[in-house]
Length: 135
Image 1 (tube, rainbow, N blue to C red):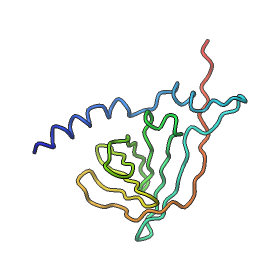
Image 2: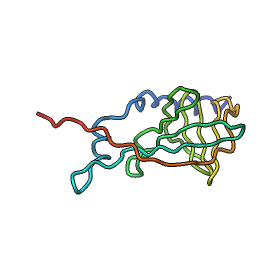
Image 3: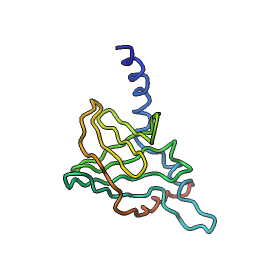
């Protein structure tokens, strides 16, 4: 029960991170040559029991600011990075995505495993969304 206030305190900022700010996406998509570089990278995963899911990761320079996006069973979820004793962990109010080495697992916030032993299949860049110049 002592853990509940700590968990609630961690969840309070989640609505603030629900949508990425266009300015951050624009900065992530800028390149020296003037061409846009990917703001996100999509990685497809093959998990145990032939389960598939996709995760869109932000570029490293904005990874602490932008949430990841998970496509799981036809639904999109945004998860923010949270502290972890080992590996990299992301969480939302519903899901937890935990990468440790080359394997990952998708859990509910209650700890039920949805997809385990997830191995990356392929990674593909997702182009940055251009933003119109300010008047």
